[in-house]
Length: 192
Image (tube, rainbow, N blue to C red):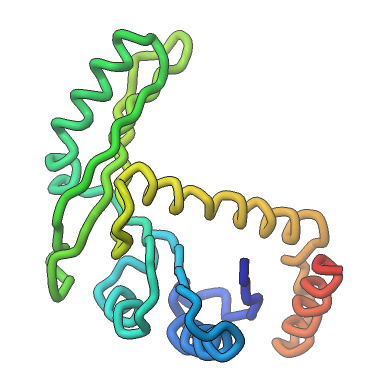
């Protein structure tokens, strides 16, 4: 897993500087590992057409989280019904995977979207539908693609360890570069 820790102003969006950083990382990885397939896995804040176009232009495999909306939920309807039936029968949380071709209004073209139709059952509560969506260019089965997306949870746990265990967020200096240096030292300490 490759994670870059770079400070940005507190009011900058998540994508701020990401294009340049991605291009630099991909260039270095391709130089170090020629012929290797590179895969990018990111959250829904990166599901805009600009980001997807960059990923496709860079010829990388990608799995990008996608925010739910009414159109996607309608497309997941049959799968949610199937998951609900399975959940009624088993009495447990159940999920069913599927796919659709979809284009948000801002996208330049239709792309493959994986659907995870889940019905969550918790003791003492009514069952709750919990559809999830990811956009991808991977060719694997919907369940396999969603499993790839879920692997990011492990990376997020490592980041949480870094943030909470080593106080990564403690950037109390009034100077940006001093705070950036502290973040880099903290990340180096975590790696060691």
